[in-house]
Image (tube, rainbow, N blue to C red; front, top):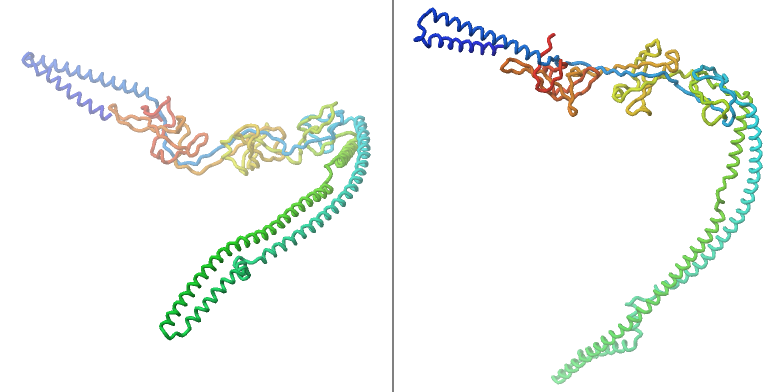
Length: 553
């Protein structure tokens, strides 16, 4: 509004200047003051009406523009505690259902009760055909006698088979022991031979000892060795001989030289003979040692063969023992016959018990008949004739809640329930079980026991639970939260200055929802503040960037 006033003053000044120009700018043409004053007044009057009409049109235009803008309601985020309500409809069901059974195969004569009927304990429920029952008892007695005769014959055959088995076991054990003794004797003999061969091999001298013994026994070797020793002795005698003249000394020297030459030749002869003797002795020593090793190896091989033979003989004898001790092929016919006899006796006893009751099936407890499966004229089967409740066990209230509501409800929470046509209110009832529904996905079954005074079987009702979460710092109405399919966001009403003055514009702000109930959402404090004006309602659809105006209270 201040801007509009400013521009109006400027326009007025411009018009006045134009009027003065028109009035005084052509003074040569207009000389009469009266005419000039009249003209001036007409110009001012015309300008006045122009601006008046311009101003009125501006007001009308701005009013029409404002009237077309969507009006919005705003609220600032506030602190509050979120309350979640869990509500569900359910029914009163039996707390315990009992199946009423009867021995199968008996014809049903009459069903004595109706579905929903209350019955007392031992009250007749179904009447069975007594004539048919008598016939069944006679048939069972005949079957029992037949199976008794079969069992007696089987027991006698088992005794005969046991005696024959004992004889075979005794013979197999004796053969096993004889085989073991013979094998041990043979192995003992072979082991003695091995020990003798090893002793002979161990007595054989080493290569050094063998060579030394051979040289002592070889005449040629000893002769050459003795010749060298004799010459050495002669050399020592000559060296020790006294000489007087030069001729004698020269003669002595020649003799010494001659003896050294002979000793060297004798040594070369001994070395040559020693080398040839050693070569022949080496071959002879290795051959004899190899023969001794082969002898040991031969007897050890014989021992292995004897051991293998013993293992084979003992394995065959052991198998014979195993065969003799092996249980006969499993024959369960006798045990099955005994079981069959006991089962027939149990069936006969059950038929007789039903006969003693006059063919009537009695209620095992006080309760209500829930389902009837028995059909008159047909025979009883292995299924229940009917199902009934146990009145002493009371009832249960059962309702289904969604997966979303499941996170707000826990076992032990206290709920409020309205049951029956008169909507009897039951408060502070603890939840006993919460289980996944077997029939519907993402649904949970909530149940808790109630007494028979709280409701009747089949009554419908409604369950309610209020759960208050902790205080949240920034809460806004759920109507203020929008989604584009990817993110949640709110629209803020922010002030925007234009040539037409102050305006409000819708600004998007992406938010994270921490929690929400059916009316309020708690927003993460990082997205908005307590001073922000959140758009919570609008007279028409708005989007980010739209110009809006506030709803008037």
